[in-house]
Image 1 (cartoon, rainbow, N blue to C red):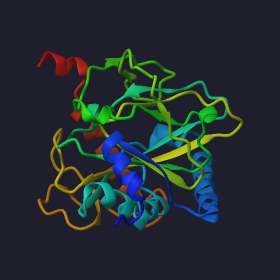
Image 2: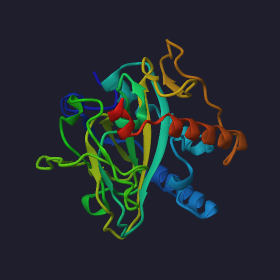
Image 3: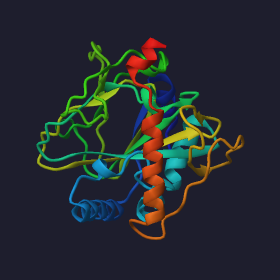
Image 4: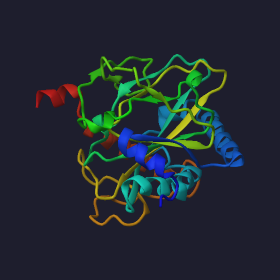
Length: 276
């Protein structure tokens, strides 16, 4: 019997590559996390996603607590097994009336997870609807290649680092993964997904937790780090991460910056891959 998902959601994940909505946080917890997020951005005077990337949780005890929420591990275990690691986290936010978007892409293009079995839990800290630019997906697209051809556009309105885009996607059957604040979705890293601009009056706040079975490894660089949240890292593929003593812990900030540098250097561009 599944621990967090319904049997229908488990079957949908395997068939279509995603599942939603899944309840996670109480209204009081959502309010607390949103307050902390807003205080963070006020403190740094910038968007959190512009500074804290790939391991956005590392310098903050409240985010380290969030990623260890047992219901996240339960949901992942329902679809991918008992040995669960979290190798990364990312903010995906759009301001009210924000023209920025995310193009059709696969996460597996740059993640470097081998085999490509990473799953993202996308946690909504504000309401995510069509008008606010919620995630949309192409059902079943995870059953194809781990990396299909992408074009790197570097469009400044695209929230992806390289504007990586799959061209000519058939959107006929696209599904909009609408979430209430405190809910999350799961999607496979090979699934085609995107999101449109936020036309609503409120910010759209998403916190993505990148999870994988512990038998997966980081193939683009050595000594990758992760948090083991369920079971064991039986192959010792992952190094442990520091835990922050307080917000902006300098040791954890250093570890975050080192991780982002290694990740960026390890990424191979689509053009390079095509030439090899």
